Length: 122
Picture 1 (cartoon, rainbow, N blue to C red):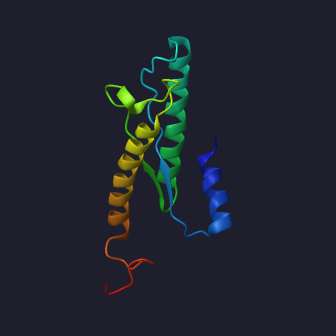
Picture 2: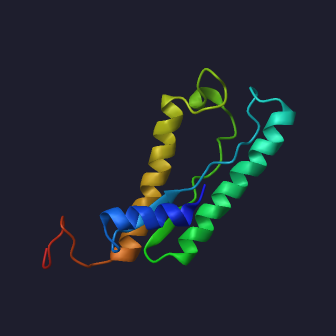
């Protein structure tokens, strides 16, 4: 994956002023479905990919990285049938985490500036 190339390609297509947000990759943790010989290199690879996203975000203008957090302490209904990928409930929970972080980021970066949804003086 080349995050900086992705940024360049998106901005060539949509415009230089388009803000971009990368959702951080969750840690692999200890899913029961993965044997140790697979889990360890996969966890290392996920950390490398997430580091690339973070690095690209620090180098780009209006490019952000939102940490996704790790898996819950107790898997429960968070994992799907394969015991590796999130279930529907797990994806909803992840979306809530990212949504809250995106709202905080948006408020911090836009502040009181007018947007298409919030014209000046409103």
